[in-house]
Every structure is written in C-alpha cells, then in structure tokens.
Length: 107
Image (cartoon, rainbow, N blue to C red; front, side, top):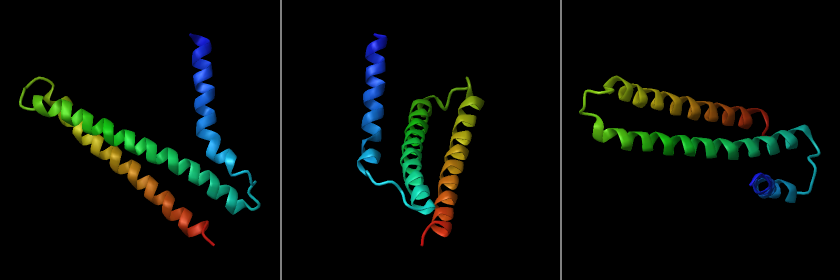
C-alpha cells in the first residue's frame, strides 16, 4: 500500500510539473523568472480560493437548515462571519499581488 501511495504521489507531481517542464526554455532575465514563478503561484492561489469557496458554501448549506435551533447558534454565526472575513482577505491579498506584479514586472 505504501509503494502505491509513493507511485501515485510521483505521478501526480509529474503531471503537475509537466506544463512547466514542457516550456523547456530557461528564463533569461530576472523578470521572466519572477513571471514564471508568479504564474505557478497564481494557479495554486486560484485552486485554494476555489476550494475555500466550495468549503464555505458547503458549510453554509449544511448549517442553514439548523439555523433556527438554539444549540450552537453562536458557533454557526461565527462560522459565517469568519468565513466571509477569510475569503475577503484571500481575495484582497491576491488582488494586491496582481497589482504589484502589473506595476513592477510588466515592461
């Protein structure tokens, strides 16, 4: 079972790295290197933000039917409020990084 897990992780790493490896041209300038790293990080950020939205809406949908009950009411309200705050912070940081990239790295 452990060998299968290692094989799966190696295959997943290869599949995720394939587009980057297929580029086959090393960056010639600092700007090209940073742009390629930012592109990879943007793909990860989009994935994380999508997972956060899915998780938040799953939590809302599972708790919305229980909202009238008195048990754990404060916990449910805190879940909604903190979920919105976390999503706002994630999107804000992503926007600030895009602004910095467009300001300093675009020629």
